[in-house]
Amino acid sequence: MLYIYSTPKLSSPWERKNWGACIFKNLFVALQAMPQVVIVVVGMSVLTYLGVIKFVVETLGRVLAFCLDISPAEGINAIGNIFLHVVHELLL
Image (cartoon, helix red, strand yellow):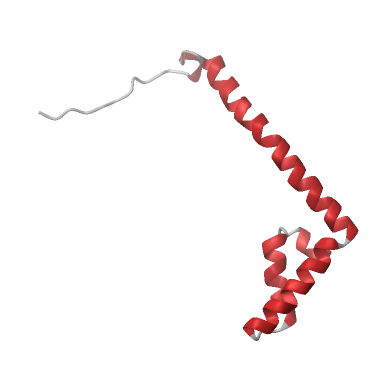
């Protein structure tokens, strides 16, 4: 005999029981991750403003270019993609 497991169909999402607990649980997870995101973003912004990120990216890019025998522009671009987002890489 073939048993097919199926969940009951709800006509709307508001018929779900314990809807408030579901929203609170998801909100709680988001609020737990928010401080870490803020710290990373602010830290990267400060390091970029001080020029530390530019120095690190250029130095590691030139080391990578030397090790892989590629042009320095390619090495800096590769390291820039690792440390920075594509939009922020234009700041180099």
